[in-house]
Amino acid sequence: MTLSDADLEARLRRLQARADAVPPPPHDLARAVRSRYAAERSRRLRLAGACLVAGLLFAVVPVLRSTVVDDGGGAASPAPSEPTARRALLDLPPRGSLAQADPWLADVVALDWGGTATGMTDPPVEDRQVAYTGDVEGLRVALVLAPADGATVLQAWFAGPAGADAEEMRLLRQPSPAPRHGPLTMWDVPDPTAPRAVLVVVSSLGDQVEVRTGRTVTADGATRDRWEHVITGNGAGAIAVDAPATWQHGAQVRVTRDGATREVIRPQFSARAVEAEATLPLDLADPRGLRDGVPEDSLELAVHHFTSTYGQSADQLGMTLLAGGPVGGTSTGAFLVGVTFPSGATAGYVGTYAVGSESPAGYVGTTRIAPAGTPLLDRGFAVRLEDVLVVSGPGTGVVAEVRAADGRSLAVLPLVDGAGTGLSPGREADSVRILDRSGLPVASAPVEEPA
Amino acid sequence: MGARDDAGFEAFVAARSADLMRTAVLLTRDRGHAEDLLQTALVKAYRRWRSIEREDPYPYVRRVLVTSAASWRRLRMTQEIVALPPHETEAPDSCEGVAERERMSAALATLPPRMRTVLILRYAEDLSEAVTAETLGCSVHTVKSQTVRGLARLRVALTAAPVDVLEGC
Image (cartoon, rainbow over all chains, first blue to last red; front, side, top):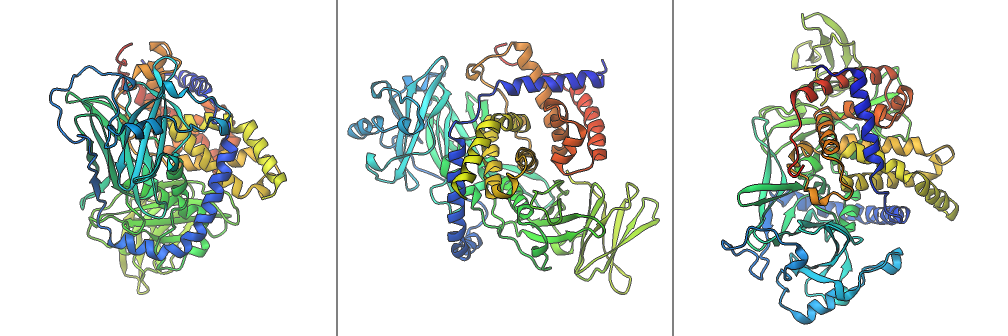
């Protein structure tokens, strides 16, 4: 059966009703935004001084490395005899390296859930139960649960420095409802200046849990997800992940049980993990001196895209501004940022922006990934964004000849140091030849539209 | 930023954050991500509040939201959600409703982000072509062409991939 446009439009409109049913954002959203803005501003200042140190750190950290944390308390021990029936988390005893420390458990269960500050009612202490508590990667973590309506529980995550007293434990984010069988997750970034996160997962007994720690691009340009085991057996544990703060958007937790995947979810983020993301330094090389002509917001988008898609820092990806600037005769500008993956494969991120405006980037997208072999600065790029063409090639290139599929020359775009932006001659444009001063071709590229 | 600016910002958030949240949910299919996206867009707006509040800030914030969503897309993430546990649904739809939502969401997820965003703004958000173009920073012609191509691809995706009935339905 063929669906008419009217059918499709009606079905799309019905999605609105679904979205209308979504609960409203938190009532303290404005306050949270202001706090995040203030934190971002102060951290930007601090980061200006710390950037050099961070850059050195990025340089010496090899390809993303993650370390499974010894969870103590038998977290890593196999449990072949675990029952396969799922039990609600409130029916399970506390887990983690401090699960047997009774005085500590009593202190943790009595911690303030912040209800006074938010206008919510905290659950009675006698109803609460510690589901997980332990020292992981320099952190002391505790997850406290309380019964809620229906199929949910209320979760409150606390953290402090390793060895902290109960008074030093702070809420990682506002308590919220969660599925009563789990899995419950917390992705925290204890130090916003360090590209390192801690993930804690609390799930049912017998669940096997993995986390996606990044994506690897091979030399032939193929992309593969990297997964690491977090926990086995008792269903609760933690892992430290070396990744930029933006990877929280790419991270996924996969829960399997009896050999079958039960679900794949995104972890929950702590408030400081969200704040850390906003302080990501704009570490990108600018060998052609183009940066002043490209709005910072546009470059932020590029850095955010690559770091959050691959789980590696801008430095690890050799992020480079390849082309950028206004398109002659228009009020539009365009930019191209490239990366070199550790395997040598390369890719680009392109976008347009309104010249002289504070508006964010307009059209953005990614180029195809090219196999290893040609250095990023020598690779021929020709990307069409609506009416705009962005070209990059070897630095000796002075013009780009835009050709039709039958070889006809359609237009010539001047280049500076091998890069340029201009109006696209239209849909006929099929490929670009980049020529040096003597008219010899130094690179070529198919005209592509970004994904 | 002064107290007066803060008051204006708070009033704006109180009045329009639910609308923005709805858009964010449509763009991301994930409430957690939608919350992050909304907060990020509001932080960017707050940075420039003095200049944008002179007129209605809503179009500006919506544009930030939309462009951020397009660039923050998570590759294949939506396809990898293998099951949505029925017990987690706070207000369960009928099985047909769940299936329909999943079918449309999965089909939309196969479209390029820009195309997907155009369809969501045009139909789920019921914006005109002109407002959609303004929001995306492109021409009305682009919106028209993306709409035509998007509906065509959506048709193919819906025809090619009949929905799996969720366990428990």
